[in-house]
Image 1 (cartoon, rainbow, N blue to C red):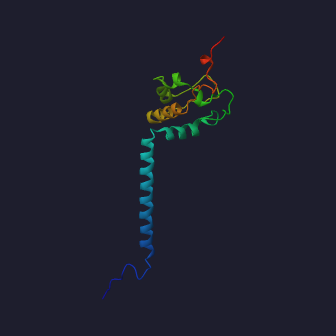
Image 2: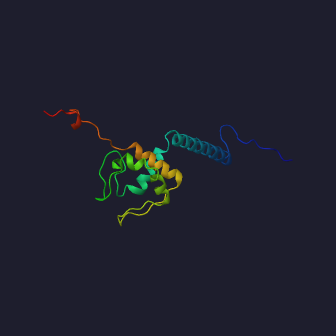
Image 3: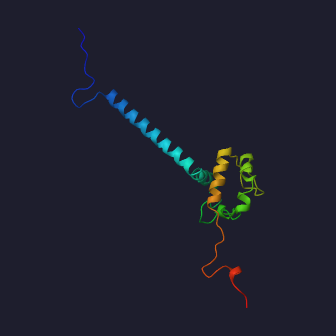
Length: 144
């Protein structure tokens, strides 16, 4: 007669059960991390995603952060683009269509709509605006 064996004896579990438990824990951890990342992405308006894109695609030549110099002499730091360029309604579209310039060594990049919007959101967030010095801006000084 065949008798059923318990799945575990004492505190030891068979390897298959341990592996299944570990797999479930791994799946749950990945699910939680991806949910956290998706929520963070949505909450931050995609600026972190935009930064990651520009870091991977453009930092070889451009300074992509709030500080630093561009590595290529003809590549302007992204923080100097200015509001007129970034609030141009066509800039994100140009990123989608394939941004290219007159510089022969700059490759043409094609962005998805979401990537283009995230990149523009990030670029807007790092723009350096002229700030008056502690002594006041030149226009605030009176001339004798």
